Length: 97
Image (cartoon, rainbow, N blue to C red; front, side):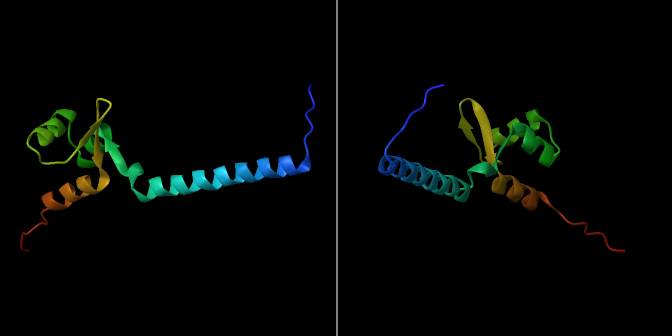
């Protein structure tokens, strides 16, 4: 095992820089959360939410019924768009007793 020694001022400066990088990383991580980047869904998620097949979801995309984005050959949907689609297609029972 090798032992490395350094001046306390150098160690403190290094420690300060590491703490600064940690704070910066935390800020960047929070910004990513704020942008809602974790709220993207893939085909399987949307199919399960809507109770439809992948082919039906593809038809929805082709007819522009649901917004989507493609990243690295994979299709993603915003949670808000899927929820809006669910709300717009919801028709409460209008039968009278």
